[in-house]
Image 1 (cartoon, rainbow, N blue to C red):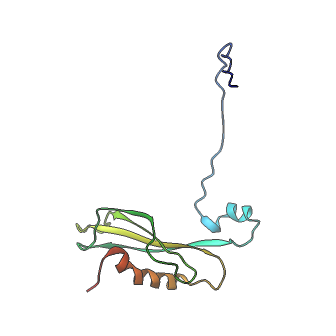
Image 2 (spheres, rainbow, N blue to C red):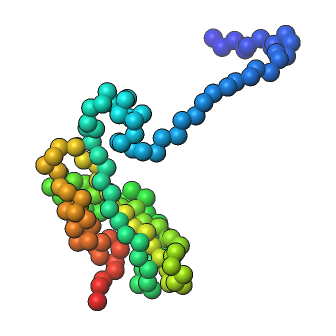
Length: 133
């Protein structure tokens, strides 16, 4: 059975809480992560390739987060992320940032970053609807 908690007799003085924050954005090369892994190699990696493009052909009215539309290619399942972005070169044309990524084990036989980028360039027209001239 549920019994309600007793009301406090008197208000306790406010407690002081202290702490430290460590922000580590170095990924697998971080000394903190290396120590946490016992200095062993990572078991897996997330390979990421992408581009920022501008032009009137791009549909910039939406963004994608973890979108996938292809079956597994070899040992890779590709995921996509895209969103409108600001053109840092002063153009007034719409800009769009697009990434493709996959989670892989860290075996040396996995494809190189260049091979994954080749897949990105091959799949980008299908993903974005853009066609080159």
